[in-house]
Every structure is written in C-alpha cells, then in structure tokens.
Length: 327
Image 1 (cartoon, rainbow, N blue to C red):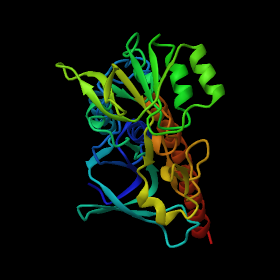
Image 2 (tube, rainbow, N blue to C red):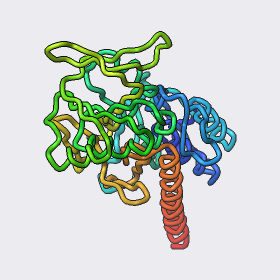
Image 3 (cartoon, rainbow, N blue to C red):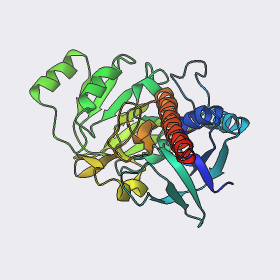
C-alpha cells in the first residue's frame, strides 16, 4: 500500500467502486478503503441495474473490486476513523485518512461513498427478516412481493403514500397504524378508495412459518391476535455513515425525523462536490433514496469531476514551475 494517493475512496459499495474504476482508468493512483458492511447485505438480489438484473449484491461488489485492481487501483479492507484536512480550510487537500488499525494514508482528494445504515422499529423478529420479507423499497422488492398479502407499517409520514403505491403490485394491501396517529379523513378516503385495509393497534412482533418466511404480524389489543401477512414494508430511520467528516464541515446538516437523525449530509453540488474543498460524496451518503444503479452513476460523475479538478491543479503547478524556472 502506497502512503500517498491522488484519490482515496472511502466506501467500497457501488458508488465508491464505480468512481474508483473511472479514476484508475484515468491513470490516477486510487485506494478504496472498504469496511465490508454494505447496506444491502441482507438482500438476495440487486434489481433495476440494466444488464445485471438479479445479480447477488456480493457478486456485484466482487466484480467491482476486480475491475478496480485490473486498472491498477488498490482495495483495502479497513475502517476509517478520522480524516484530517489541510492547515488552511480553503485548500483542496491534502488529507490524512486514519484507520482503526493505526495505519494512515494521504490523499490529494477524497471521494466519500460510505453509504447509510438503517434503523428499524424495535419489534421482535423484524431485523431477522430485513431485506427478505421485511422491505422498504417497492422498486427493489415489489415484483417479488407481487400478489402477496402486503402489510405497511406506519413509521413515517410517507407510509400512507407507500401503501397506495404498493397497490401496483398486489390487491391485498393492509396499513398497520402501529403506535402512530391514525390517518386523517382525506388519507383514509384515499386508502379506502383503493381497497387498502386499515388495521389499528400496536404491532408487537412478526410470525414466521415452517420455511422461515413471514406469515403474519402479531397485534396487541384486548385479545392479542395474528394478522396474515407475507411481506411487510417498513420505512427505516436512515443515518449516513459520515461521522468522521463532522470536524471538517461545520456546515454539515441534519434532517430531523421524530427527534432521530435521518441523515447527515454535506452540502453537495450536482457532481457530488461538497462545501469542503477537495471532498466529494456519492451514493446513499449523499442521496438516501438512491438505488444501486443510481449510486454507481453518482460515483462515476464524481470521479469525472475529481479528475478534472486534479488536472487543473496539475496544470496550475506546471505553469508556476515553468514561470519560476524562467525567472
């Protein structure tokens, strides 16, 4: 492992690997630092990725790592704990990237693609089924849940709209109000018009069949009972994995959701450039709703911008050296 790189990519998911491939092909020295904890670990397949429909997430990442190294990039398993910026905040690098094992590397530029982590309601059994029968994205899993008994757990203001959306995939959709206020009259009318059932009461657990798949949800009440359910849609609390950048960006913003952090975001431009010179972001850390193919595209776009920025710096330095040599 070299000690100084043109670009260090923090995060080895689709966004980070896509950006690293583009930078390596541009003949930049690139290091990808991958903590090995992708958000979609629990999912069986990737969907919506043209030409790679249905590929396993682990296979997609393995291919991406091979492509990075094929063009001379490096991939390192590790956890970034700290990033130290240049002495002058206005300078675009260099950055010192520190790892949990005590190692550190320097980078002229950083591409942060660390993704997010999902916080689920504290309901027994929910986490074990996450990514398989407990879902959050209809476009990722709706086809697999088609014509099943689909439940929507109200965990966010968007849950009612989610239930209406899921009618595209099933005629049997139930909204579980759980521990939130009931839908208002206008929302209730829309749900009823589309045939979405509304079941009141706290969901206290999930029930699985002999095959380990979801078969129902358990509800509290005067008499505890089980409602049949084969797929349960939950909107998680999403937190971006970018805490190590907080010291670099006093402008970092948080969006609140029920007094919990929804996501920490650096203020980014369309190409992923942040308010910290020399740092770009891509993927879910910058756009929580981005799907796999979207994240990969964001990584590529950021890589092009980073390389252009380095070209400008390299040229400015060459001009200065030429002029100083002629004096």
